[in-house]
Amino acid sequence: MSLIKQPSTMEKIAGNLAVEAALTAIAAAAGTPLAALLPVLGKSLASERQKLRVEATLREMNLFPAVDIA
Image (tube, rainbow, N blue to C red; front, side, top):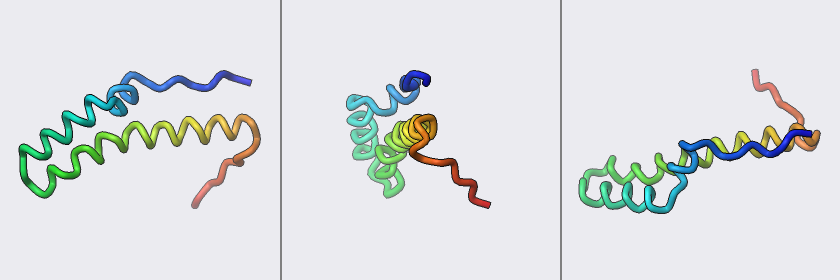
């Protein structure tokens, strides 16, 4: 059984509280409706990759079989 994969550098950066605060400050300063999505998009990278890591680990443990959606 392999070890749990560690988060990548990009995940660590995207999930960092300081980065989230900076993106929120930029969104507030920009004032456009689309700027409000900046913090959400910044967090989505880290959360999506974490989801993939958890699913891969569960698959290795045979608790979560691979499902092919076609």
